[in-house]
Amino acid sequence: MAKKGAIKKTQPRSVVTGGAGFLGSHLVDYLLGRGHHVVALDNLVTGSVENIEHLAGRPDFRFIKQDVTEFLFLDEPVDYVWHFASPASPVDYLELPIQTLKVGSLGTHKALGLAKHKGARFLLASTSEIYGDPLVHPQREDYWGNVSTIGPRGCYDESKRFAEALAMAYHRQHGIETKIVRIFNTYGPRMRLHDGRVVPAFIGQALAGQPLTVFGKGEQTRSFCYCSDLIEGIYRLMMSRGNEPVNIGNPVELTVLEFAREIIRATGSRSKIVFRPLPQDDPRQRRPDIGRARTLLGWEPQVPLAEGIVKTIEYFRGRS
Image (tube, rainbow, N blue to C red; front, top):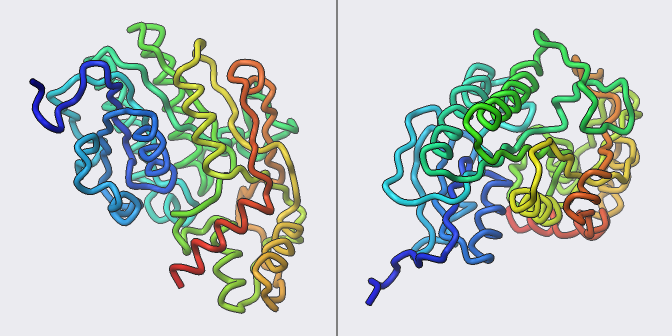
């Protein structure tokens, strides 16, 4: 008889790096719901134990506090490696540029090494930032991007571009099944209030009755995808055939100024809007072409912005 809590032979086994982060923790929940045994790795530099504390004591979940740039040793089978470890907000990667470059290079190398050793599939959480300040709109996966290698955002943009190249090198040379998801602006519960991204920034300011800070004239555009939609698309990508990058995001585009007004309306706030100079290299347009995701995965977002924003506001109200 198998020991209580033992991993079933037929149970899928997943490793999630960055598993205590915003998206990583939602992925962990999703995988557990699909019957996976999950090991989450995180050094907690930008992740939080609060995001996974509800999983304490589960026999199908284990958390290891570790920096992914160090050697990854697991004395157990692994079927899937989901590489989500990385600072992902402007505040984080501008404060931690070297760490961001290291996790994108050394960390990706270690995660791919684990997948190679275990014969596992590998998925890289890449980003729409690899397109930089795009000259093509909307952004398709065959667009090579317009990125400043030496600008303040270069540490994040280039770490992800390198990670994509490394994943494809492992696929071509070692035959690893690699998947690359290019994540566009995503929002939802478990975002950090002061992480510098526009959704928590605007919601936090509106709930506090403070002015909402819009950079430039607010004419730059963004497309916002709710976290549950994103995780569903990512899971389908890992289980799919093919190794080319796939955009996952919401193609509904709006200006930052329009989004600020939507947050004020949704929160019932009396906040005003103030304008500040644009940060260096801030992308003017961001909207995914999701044709490949529709064709390859049968995926498109299901949660309307108004619905997702209400859920996100409720989360931040509960923490204020």
